[in-house]
Length: 183
Image (cartoon, rainbow, N blue to C red):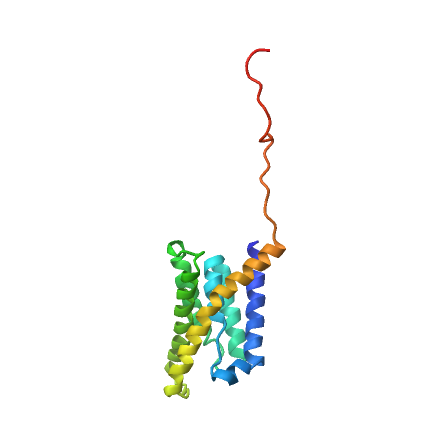
């Protein structure tokens, strides 16, 4: 299931980047381009291994940068930091709780654009910053955080449809009688 999980996560990352760059209805409505990858990174970090997290960070970051104004590779570092941090403390996190999904989603969706902005500023880029940047950051944080439970529901539904539950069979029937005594 691990290879299938990785394949589904990467396919959703590709579709998410395509949707972000192609359909601008929400962007025109609220004035914010919502980044779907940090929320997906939270899901991948909580549900799969380090290989999937690394592949999502590299492939998703490159796909996102190829279709945005960022330099190639800027989005990889924030995604890797988010993924590796959650992966490191995964054993301490209540993975099945919606509250945990929301908190991690808000944190990841708020952290990723700030780190990307710091990287862009460090190499001498001159992004347009102003009071509207705070609104964009706030909206990206809230909408990205709300996406994490949606990803968990989506993947649970996919695995429920495509997967199967293993039946543990014993060689003995549970309703059999054991005759004891003589004769």
